[in-house]
Image (cartoon, rainbow, N blue to C red; front, side, top):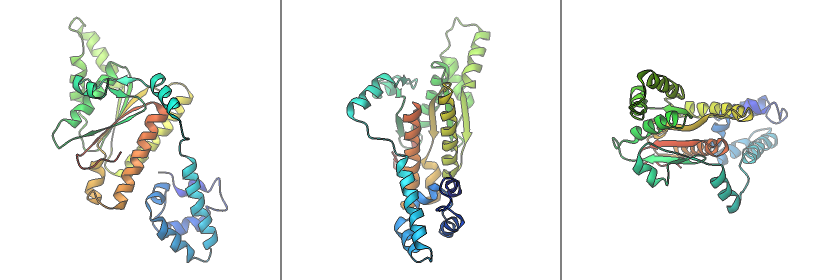
Length: 271
């Protein structure tokens, strides 16, 4: 998460130590903290301070900075051309699911995988990762929030795709190469997830500028498990956090042509 202090470099007279201390008294240390805070309450509190005018300027400037990061409007023709020319499909490895998705996971889009407990959602995530890493030779980032990532299971999926005529040495080399295309990070709280996603965004930006971006699939298994234990699935803060994650995931998908596959519970849609 970007700390408020990072804004001081570009706007030293507004985001000075006084403004940062004011925000800290309300539990606001990062841009994400600002987004989920009650704006009306923050403005009312600022109005009671001796330097209220300057504080109001800071609050307004943060809003304008955030809005300035929004993507420009595109018309239907631009969106259709982008979808047809620049986006490709990745198979999930499961024929019926690919049929429902009209060919598979589409680059530039976020797919939310929803269903009751023990319905096979994690299995789909693992198999999609295996197919992308082996058959599409693409990089996979797997964010595991519930200790569900199974390298052995993924290796089994990859091995099943080998032709019988392939030698044992060839199979082992192909398996090593495919497994090397998969990176896994274990995450156990929502704020760590936001941190990792922003780190991934920075990495993808550097790779895109160098024209060496190989990551094609981002899997999050799952988002809801990070929020429900803390907030019980209710309350405005929980909703705001889910919206923040959803917006960032969509941004990663669109700007870097990723397939983003997210697992959630049946009662915890966030996209």
